[in-house]
Figure (cartoon, helix red, strand yellow):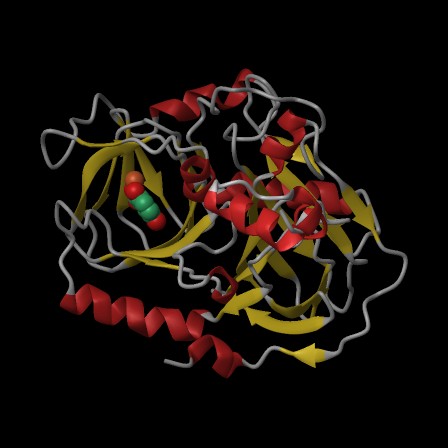
Length: 357
Ligand code: GTQ
Ligand code: FE2
């Protein structure tokens, strides 16, 4: 048998010789297929409004959601390899039907009022800047009882759960689940323990999601103000925590908020694991992998694993973030590195790239 014969016979036997693919498998550091990318709010918002006009929210389609599709992922509707990110729109007096799924979700509200998400019978009122959890396998439906549309960011661990071949989905037998009692019952759990950690959650891990389902913007804002008063740093970061365990809000997803001082910039940091940022307030830019991405309120951007990320604020800026760090910590594979110097900017992301049809 010649070497060529061996390769042909291996292929025919569904065997692959590792020595020919080692370097593409065991890379010195992560090589995510997803690329750093930005979705301008100014591009998404009119399309979401048209979708409200043209597309009803019904059983089957379930949600009026525009998913952020990272151009590095070959058409998959995922913002990064492990994360789903999307803009959800709910028109006045609409409801999105009740269902549950094994992937867990978080909502970060951008705009609107008079909306609640019911999670296992607890109606959670939603206002701008609020974070609402719908943990895996919790029944959930969304209701807009107001006269204005509402827009929020959805973050899910769907690609992770899909990679684990563990996606389960079930529609609720009725369009809406009954609301058990007064709204926001889970908020009584807020005093069980701290609801924020400065920076990021340390070692705490919890296979259960936070029983507190809503984190109010007023509390987040007050905590950022308190923490920022105690340092001279360019950025003050917090992570939302499960008040019972001190862990990230979901076993698979961590959520944070970052307040950047006007005119200041963070040093580049790279982390194992993917992140998505939602600009809640302010204007500035981030440099990711040497590329500059200008942003303003309503924009969303993807920071794939191990790409250096630094943030520059023009005005005071509040960035919401979601990432898969809890999974990395649980598996003992989390890494983080702060670089000593700002990145050299070699290109600038053109807004048209985010708006081209
Ligand atoms: O609101 O229940 O963005 O089930 C993707 C899947 C939102 C939701 C998404 C979902 C939802
Ligand atoms: Fe859902």
